[in-house]
Each structure stands twice: as structure tokens, then as C-alpha cells.
Image (tube, rainbow, N blue to C red):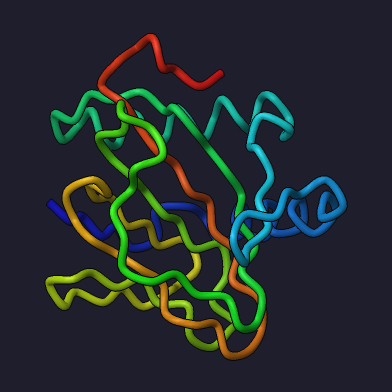
Length: 160
């Protein structure tokens, strides 16, 4: 299943998350050629609101999962990710990527089955990253901001 939801997050909320990411750039950790910040560093009420929105959306589709890792990710010019499976944790069963902006060139999410997702502010793509090989085309201009969430069926892996 690859589920693409247009306007999943409100554009103003996306702007707020981008501003938070920029303001906390010095706290970000380099991973490959991107910068990441753990979402738990965000204001707790917003953190809770977003988790409820994601989990409620999935539960309405009979997908019961728990967030195990939530990151704000900054992709700079030149950043890309080749086709891969999500293998960082054995417990991961679902991935979501929410585009927080679209004022950049490149940075499309693509899948081995030739599905290509064009970034649009607020759009979220949900998929099983362990089952669907996916990647990100090179960002050729601007900065790509996303909220990446990995989910587990195991409540013991619950991200707090």
C-alpha cells in the first residue's frame, strides 16, 4: 500500500514546523547528506496534536500502529537518497513523509514500482518502507523540509 494524502497538514502548521527546523539548525544531527532533529524537541502540545492527527488518520483506515521515530529533516541542494528499504529498526512496519514546503526543485519521493510523488506543502505519503523500495531524487535548488515518521505494530516501541 502506498497512500498519498493531499493537504494532510495545514500549510500554516507546515510553515511553523519549517521555522522550528530553521531556528534549531544548530541542534540538528547530520545523517548521510541531510540534517535531522528529533521531534521530541518540539513544544509538547504540538507534538501531541500531530501524533493524534497521524494515528487517528491511520486508525480510520484500520491501520493500528505506534510512532517509533519522528524526525524533522532538512535536505539541502545536492542531497538525495538512492533506492533503499527502511532497515534501521526491525520493528518498523510503516513510514510516512510529510512535505513541509514545496519551494525547491527536485526532492521527489520515488518508488521502484515507478510511482513518483511530487512534493506539495502538506502532502503526506504513507507506505511500508520495509516492503517498498524508495528513494529521493536530488534536490537541485532550495531546501526540502519534511516530517518523517516511522511506525511499529509493537507498543513497546512507542515514541514519546
